[in-house]
Length: 130
Image (cartoon, rainbow, N blue to C red; front, side, top):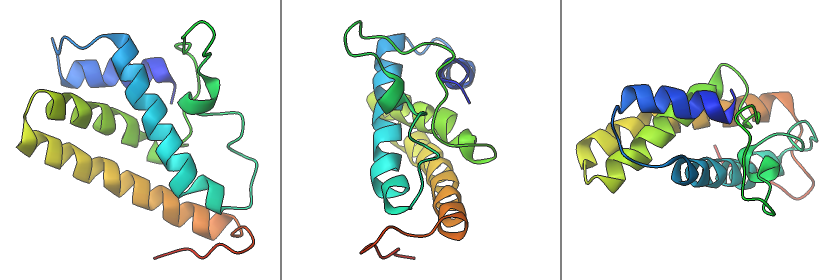
């Protein structure tokens, strides 16, 4: 999924949310950085080195292109709209909606982590926690 598509879906789910694109890009960068640290860096792979909002964000011009590919592949990429909606809900104080969206995002994240554990060997001195 691209950054633009994730933002577009989240904006459809939370119409008139009033949050600007830069804030949503920050949330996407934080999401991919967290996924990279908690899942991808534990796997012995380079498949994710060239994707992700945390990697593709150009700090010099503070820009993430609309077509920038986010880290999670299909079918786990539904994580991003749910994560963005959760952040919007949290910022608006909608704690029940936040909890529901984070539950769906966490499910996608856990499924991705399980897929990584089965597809890639762990890095040396890394133990997966199930």
